[in-house]
Length: 390
Image (tube, rainbow, N blue to C red; front, side, top):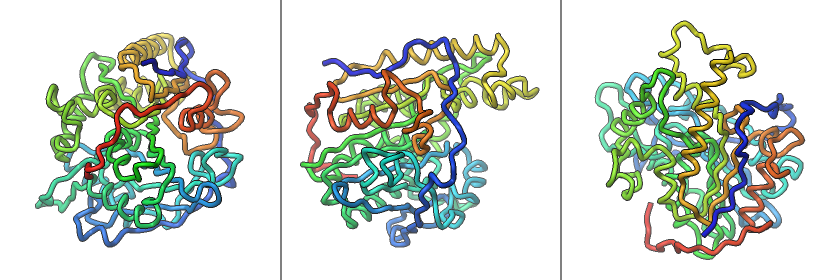
């Protein structure tokens, strides 16, 4: 089978001017739902508070269609990190605002979101620090931290099921960064939740993380993920085909997870992902003199040597990406922009300034892939086992 690859392979340019300030009028503000009932099944944020989400109802032709967006926000791999996180909105629903903005892929106007604006759109709040995959029964004795991300995903999906998702005809699971990784890790589970007749696909944004060396040749990212896996008890929620042949921490690198995803998947990524440049190539502790600060804050200010290092990173990214096995149910959108996701913003998702490949914005490419247009032909070679459970 062949894979339709919508990709830019010319990687000499390491930035592009696609991001502009978004007008506040472009945002739709949606009320929060704190799922108090989830605490009975132990589905809680790091501090023990109930999980939460924002739902904006669909209408018309989108009444039976759903987009579930998993919020991003990195990870915490140590007790001090998770404790700090538990005092913020990324670890506690007590610190979440009553309203959150919907834009880009979550907006309710055809101007910003031409294909999905009238679908039921949900933003799932991220408060477990492990991409919705942790599940440790014991509460940390000293700091009272809860590692229950997998239970949060399950509880919220069950609540949305009761609110109409059980009758879905179309559904997309998506997310950015840590939420994009969660999208891949939960993609097949999500499909098994929906009616057998529903068209279900997943879109991972800015979640293709590569196991690369830092500027000094160390493996910081691998050690960071190992800590996350051990602290949050992730092994049982990672793909068994992956954990059986390599260290569990390596299964969090998406190039190892992707081959085992059966549900149709679309990947959006920047070759020069700013998160990876900041946290993999140049982690803060390796730059005590802040020699890379100006470069990371504004890539046009990089020195010639820094540009060479970043371009080498881009070459490795493409080589790693090209090792992915071919699959006709997948689509890819890669750019050489210096960015990290943001499909929730119109300037990245669909606007006059959005990145384009083959004259398609990300919104147009995803829609063509989802609706099987413009050469996309889809036949599911891996039917979902209907007895699967979350």
